[in-house]
Length: 549
Ligand code: SGN
Ligand code: CA
Image 1 (tube, rainbow, N blue to C red):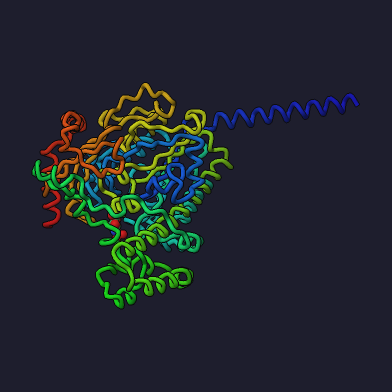
Image 2 (image 1 turned 30 degrees about the vertical axis):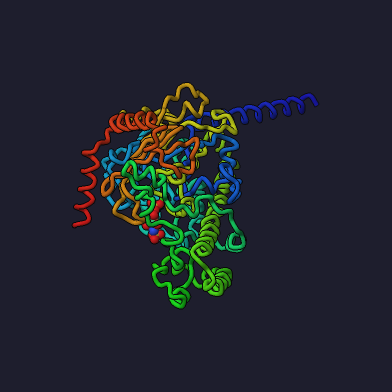
């Protein structure tokens, strides 16, 4: 009996030792540096994330990141368009420094990017989804990226082993590829950087089949500025100061739902219907639907054919206003349908991290490459420094560091990511990066944050959607914008009184002092970031040379 007891005790001791050893090994092997999961979607408006605004859609999974972390209400981009924004994220530099001024110009690969630095510092690095420039992103151990914009259905991917077409729906596939990497090729002894980059909800907004019915049956609230006529100064004041009453840039932009959103490509009416109604110029292209296989197409037609028929019946009675409303609803149904897919897939990734016990030592970031207009000012698309496209969603989860459920109102930018991630990894950032690490804000050290203003500069003009070149400065209270190149117009908005930016107070005598201060601050900020009129002209010239060649 005694011997039996001794054997049992010995066995218990062995088991204890074994379990201690297992724990010890686990601890010594577990990377102490945090993993970084950077989730970015393309054109995801903060108005379409319920943590910001729950009038349009519920996004419970994306919201989890904020509930367990921090929600930034004043996150902005330095240039509201895809590839320049991505170049800023990777380099920590403004557009005029990294040189990727628009979606077309090449990315100068001598720029140092934060993934390259993290890879050198011992991080395992992987990228899946939409990058939108360069087919060979530097600094990644593994990547599978969409060429250019990529397709919603049966997309082609560029991989290190060559191109491959994968059947299915893009948001699901990007997640499958990501989870497959985490499950099978993650090296447990290394911390990792994972860039998980969605194509959705980019134009032309094709949801997954499982979301067709729900979203096409919904009707969405209409934004107060849907019928904006772009008058920003009263005609009397405009006359007296010899300035246009209407913002020329806003008025001439080609992103109006009524005039520029196409019934064919965007609202998915077939060519024959559009021709029958005598609306040829509202067709534009077939494109995305043609990428579906016959089964996918049949599922689409089953839901969308009745909508087309209903439109044919209704069109003869429509006027500009009712047509705008119809197009707006169709736009939001498809746009938000794609976001339902993103949210579900973000949930799959968060669940995986949790199941594998990776959630505690992983920083999860959710953001978009810029904001987007969901009918505000009558628009779709982005590009302007006005709020809906200047601001971008930003939610960060970092257990034991960020106090759960915090709302952060400081002005941060996509410019700050590179330095943030380097600090998280304990790596010193190169001195020429132009942002600021967000780590103090994540730790709740508000007093360590002293940024008063942020800088913006947009270049892709002449170009698609015809948004004129402009640069500007924003503080929490005011925004000053200068449109230049083929115009010379100034706009000043009072963010507290006029968050919808409908009243340009640049010529209002009551704002004379604000105008003076903001103009001076803009000059200072341009100097600080090394931007100048000389560079503005340089980039105009470069653009012209490119168009000639
Ligand atoms: C495409 C879209 C545009 C969009 C740009 C840039 N047109 O060219 O509407 O502004 O992308 O978007 S489409 O006919 O091809 O859909 S970005 O997010 O990549 O910058
Ligand atoms: Ca984009």
